[in-house]
Image 1 (spheres, one colour):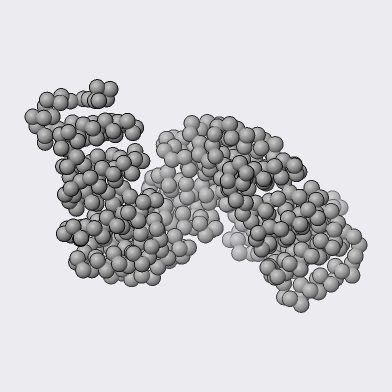
Image 2: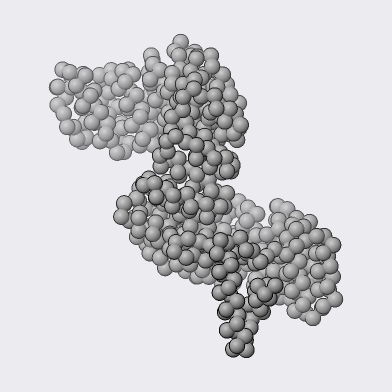
Length: 548
C-alpha cells in the first residue's frame, strides 16, 4: 500500500528506533500529506503496528486530518482509541471547535472529566472557541464555572478565552469585568478586550483601551482599524493606519483588508493604490479576501479598469470574487459586461449566492433589461434553489419601475411574502417621478411616511413630481406637511481626496480646520464669476453666506 507514497526514511530504522521515527520520520511523513489518499495510506501504516493507539502519534495524525479538512475522518479514528489522554482530547476538541461539529467539541470537553481526567489550560480555550462558533452563551457560562472549580480561572490563557467568548456573545460588560480582574495581562488579553469592544461596535471604548496598552502588536492596530471601518467611520480608520506606519508597525494581510474597507467607503483611490503597491512589494496575496477588497476598492473609487485588471490576474477566485466584480461593473453602469461576467462565472462552475443575484438584478436594472431580469429572478429558485429575499424583490421593483412597468412593480410589492420597506417604497416613488405617475407617487409617499417619517428626501421627491406637472398648490402642501411634522431637509455633502487624505464637507459647515481659507478662495472664485456675468446659484449661495 505504501509503495506509491514517497518515504524519506528506512522502515527498518523506524522499527528499530520508535523515538527517532516519531521525532523525524513519522512527522516528516505526515507533513508530506496533501490529499485523502495519503491520509488513508498513513492510517493503514499505523494500524498493523499499533501506532494508532499511541496518543501522541494519533494526536499528530488527527491534527493533520484537520489541517487538510478531513476532520470527520480524524474524529472517526479518534473514537476507536480505547484510552485517550487529555492531550489527545484537546487536539480533537481544537479540530472540531470552529466547524459545523462544534457541538461535538463541547461534548468531548465534558467527557474529559467523565473519563477521570482534569481539563488543562488548553482544554478550556479550545472549548470556548466552540462556544463562540455556536454563540452558545449558556454553555460558555457553564465552562466558566468549571474554570473556577478547577482553579484555572486566573490563568491568563483561560481568562483570555473567556473574554473572547463573552464579547463574541455580546456580553461585553462580563468580558470587561474579567479583564479588569486579571492579576496579569499579556498583549493577547489586551487584544482580546480591544477586539471585543470593536466587535460589538463600541469603537470608542476600544480606542481608549488601545491607548492604554503597555505593548501593542499588529493585531492591536488591526482591531481598532477594523472597528472604525465596521461602524462606518473610515476617516478614523485611515488615521489609525497612518499612525501605525509612523510607529514602524508592519501591517499584515488582515490589517490591509481592514484599511482597504475604509478606502472603499471613502473612495480614497490614491491611498488604495498605495496599499496595492505595498501588497505587491511584500507579496501579501495569501488570502483571497484581500484581493477581493482591492477589486471592491477600485470599483467604488471609480477605476473599474483597474478592478478588472486585478480580477483577471487572480489565479484563484471565490464566489465573493465573482460577485464583487459583477457588482462593480453594475455600479459603473456596465450592465451588459456584468451579465457577461455572470455567464463566465457559471461556465467556471462557481455556484452563485444570494448576493450574486442582487448584483445581477442590479445590472439588469441599470440597462433596462426587464425580460432578462425576470428570467434571472426566476432562476434563483428553479435552478439554484435560492429563495428570493426582500433585497431581491427590491431589485425587481426598481427594475420594473425604471422601465415604466409601474403597475407590475406595484403588484409585485403586494404579492411578495414580506412587508415592503423604505427602499422598496422609495423605488416606487422615484419611478413615479420619472414617469409622472402622481397617484402612485402619493401612494408610495404615504407608505414611506409610516416607515421613514423623518426622511426629507421622500417629501422632496413628491414635491418634484408636483412641480414637474405645474401643481404648485400641492408643492406648497408637501412643504407645509414637512414643517408640521418637523422634518428638516438634510444638508448636502461631498468629499475630496488630497495628498492621500479624504476631506468631507457639509453645506454650511465650518468645522474644517482650513474653512476660513476655503471660503476666501470661494469668495474670489465668485468675484471672477460675477465679472463674467455668470453666477451659478450654488456659488451665489456660498457667496451670500460668506458675505453675511
